[in-house]
Length: 459
Image 1 (cartoon, rainbow, N blue to C red):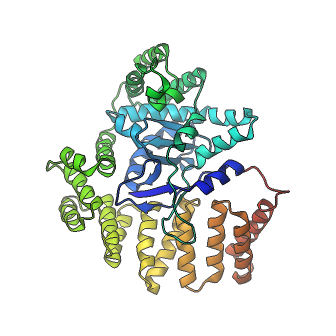
Image 2 (image 1 turned 90 degrees about the vertical axis):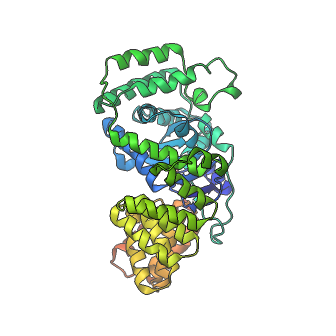
Image 3 (image 1 turned 90 degrees about the horizontal axis):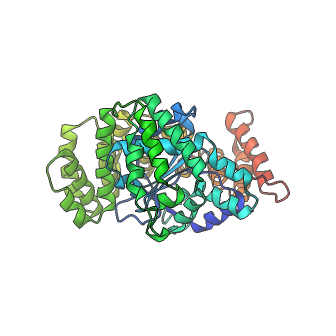
């Protein structure tokens, strides 16, 4: 699991420049996770996409456009923003009692996306500050490497996530439309729809409480008893088939993994003191959080003997070895994870980070190939561009090093810095190549965006 903090300086830029969504650069989360931070985890994202991708297809949306943000906060909330972005709090996931509730709420949020409710709010907004806050909700995933001198220190955003969510609240008419869409999508997949009704029913009792006592989901998604009864009526005429068994098993894994990373260790050790596979998985994470790497690895070796084809066990082994200073030893585990689950950009970046840590040409070339592939899957991931710049620099390719730095600054919307790096790249790149053509395109973009007279509003 990776941990990301939100840098306040960039949040200000987002408010001013109508931010695009950014995939984050993250830290291994070996200690306590700060509330309000963004986490990225290949396994949990894979599980959540198992819900969202089919729902996107049912809604006529392209799953490749999905941008998923997981916020480490106990607040019970989830929201859809523009640019096909879904924000989900760990508090929401851990409050659910089954995968049907996750599926139901996600179907509802996809309904908001398909109905373009947030886009309509932006189009109707007259106040630029409101526009900026709406844009910030899609840009909250900007993260930075702690201790990286070229990026700066990380500062947790803290409670600002609540402010961002408040701008994503919906009218009761929009809520009803999203409910109808949700039942339609779930019915199309023949996934039972009771989860949405169950989740909203749990929150209904809070409707009359003062706002400071309500779960944030109640405030941003207004509830009424009539609305819940309407959902009950629609569900009675929908497909009643249960969710696939794999989704049920994956849900348990997700809950255990989040709890092991987020709960205080003394509580989590009591919760997961058994000898089941999931208990041992949690214990592995807990010892890892406490930096007792040997105990963690011993437990993990047992899990790998039982499940040698689990890519996420291999990923965790690679992460433990890397953080315990055994960088070269971590490479084999990360390579195994990538072999078992190819085309996962987070796994690629993790392996590339270890390869970059060993300054040998063969490892640098492997890292370059991985990162070139990852950039096509997540072009807004600043980790990819950061490591690419290092790799090309060490390989003596100054043109592609400067171009990678330019791409990174473009994602961050640092237009002047990007323009300087593009001009530098053009001095080294060979004319007529794809990279030279890309640099020319970036030169035009950065020249326009760094000029106050020609800058555009970029959503």
